[in-house]
Length: 223
Image (cartoon, rainbow, N blue to C red):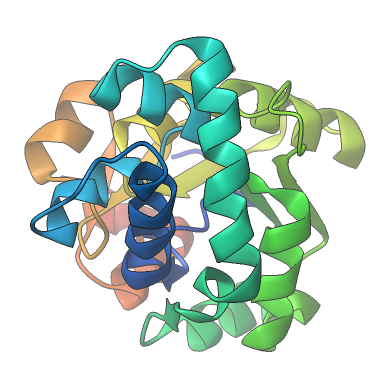
């Protein structure tokens, strides 16, 4: 079986649980338009896709209105939301073991790069990553396929070099598939087994420990 030498990690729902920060930021943005949310769990759909797409898709905002909503979102997120985040149990151990084996690790997230780097530093895991690929603030690079292309180009690698994506949503799987990169879907985040398998994830992991096994032990790559 193919050896994975390079691992791209999604951030939200894969390395950290951003539920509180993202939903409170979205709630704050929506309040500027007189929209009240009865249960913040309704806003979990904001975890994963580019923000501008979420406002347009779920609230039928025009592109211009969605851009302004993103600005409101970031007002809250920069001051409060970025800290309303939790590192998943087992992530530091996973990253440490992969680096010990000589793997090249990169983050590939639709979250702005500035915030992604800040979160990695808060949890002291930035030292494990060779590169952090994120969205830019003007949203011109926010789709997962664009972020992955940026990571590939910045690292000077090719998809044939044994890259694997690790993520919790269909956006991760589909973005990686644009470059024929296989994806391990994680079930401890915000995507369901059905969502991940339907998108084309080649393996599923219930814990970070299982992610390690799939990457480093080919015999355990069966779904």
